[in-house]
Image (cartoon, rainbow, N blue to C red; front, side, top):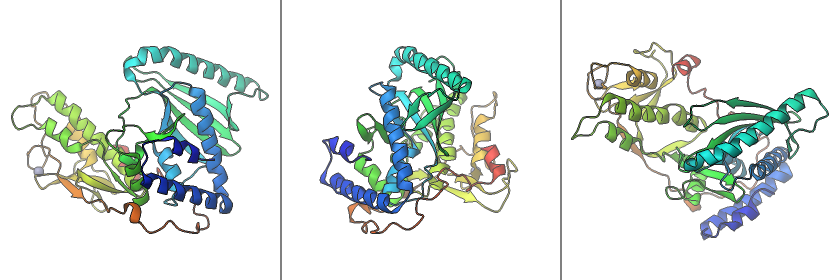
Length: 371
Ligand SMILES: [Zn+2]
């Protein structure tokens, strides 16, 4: 079922990739024989296949942690909850065509809204059913003109459910971490930004439980504080806002999924004892080390960027007034690659039971509110 045939299609694959393919195919067969949740994986994959076909757009794809989770599950790398699946489906990866996209997007959303209301009116109405998942509802988010419109779609199958965050368009290179760069489309699995990260590199990362930033946080920071010319505050806020976005929510999610972040990266840690001296939030919360030697909670970092001070262009460390420059460190890849110990020959019992892949328990509820 899963992806053996689709994987074979990719002609540029190396011998390494074929080796992995064999391993995953074997493991999948083992999982299927021994573990009831193989059925759940199959049911979700069937849903994905049916749904990507239904999207029809030649450039439509499904992205995000769920796709990575499939490989994790097949490689025995983690517990994944396939009873409650949340994924992002992208209708088109060419934002320059968004006006064209908008027309067909509106048709799609309109027809789904009608199906949703008919489903509510009559329990006999079959609705939009994909691979046994019955359509239950749609919630459309209105956006500004230039922003990609979104809709949240919900499907049920028995006591399992799938929530699809459906996005009209997204830039092809919209990837933060290499292991999240794999996407699933009518053509099978492939990399979204084929230039930056290779498919086998991403799979190696999943096997080794290592991820690295695809976006260069150091370059964003260099743009904000160039040596030769001053940058105005609005521009600073824009670049630093992007840094904040990467080091807050996304950094946490990938850490919470059990990954070591490798490569050049912000020097970060989780504060577990002291309250945040700037925001007063309780531990645990993530902090970033600055080049001036001070450290700052990322809630504090956000506060400094967002503060509206029209009298100064500066964005400074609150302790010593040096430029707000993050310190970087470089974590080496383990180079486990293809000489890793063999995949386990037996699948541990209950290895696929409910997990908390996107749980954010690294951080206290109080700090979470301030993120
Ligand atoms: Zn300082």
